Length: 336
Picture 1 (cartoon, helix red, strand yellow):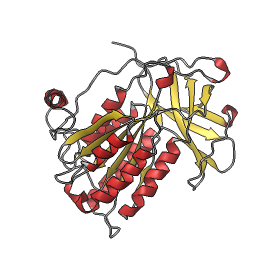
Picture 2: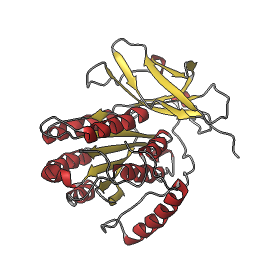
Picture 3: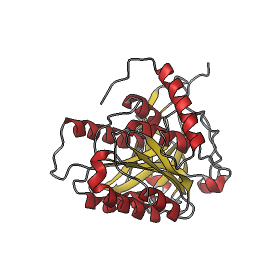
């Protein structure tokens, strides 16, 4: 994992902003580099009514969690739980859950595919697996396709058309180095632009990232991307495709650490298959998980406005069940 570059980040982001603006003017299908640039966060959308008819209102102290509950050590999901089965702790303090739903909310999803030169022999199988995943999305879901090698390209902006997603995935071709951090950054920024116009359009957000090695050419450091991910409402599912011999040098070990961090901090999950033929099953597991989650919310008991990191833990009162969600969030800060 590489540290920050020596030049000031402010100068870097200025250059990135200019490149980003130029890229968008060329259109999504042209193979020009798209580089990350900060964009203002959208206003919080409306939210669906909570159990009991009480509205779920956005606010600086309101914490929303997407929670996966599964049998310990198995890929079987528990989908019959009630609000009383959940206990939420923030920095060790029990919180009152004020919102709960088992409704399978629509999804906004970014599908990221590594198309660096090392993927050439396995790209067609990876394409087939990603297309199978895209076909399982529902009409109310939205997805975009992003490929990354030396450059990051949005091949298909957000759509609910399975055929458009398939065509975009088929257009991927292998070559170049790996700009994974840039790709995750761009996907996180793009997902923040998916703003609900009404209650029915509220979406859970996720990134599904496939890569076979370490980042070798991103302009942004991993620490910057991880911080953005932790500040987002996006679960990141990572697939680190190992070499067929099952080995992995120092580079892949660093990539494995990065992929695990992104998944664990955001409530997603990391997979490390050896054979490319395992990808279809992994994409299927991710699809099943996204359709089996709960959404819960609470108003924090912590009155501080210090912007500090707050650790969140969700527990279930049934034996042999474990809950997984993002590991925490940054509390509100006093505006300056």
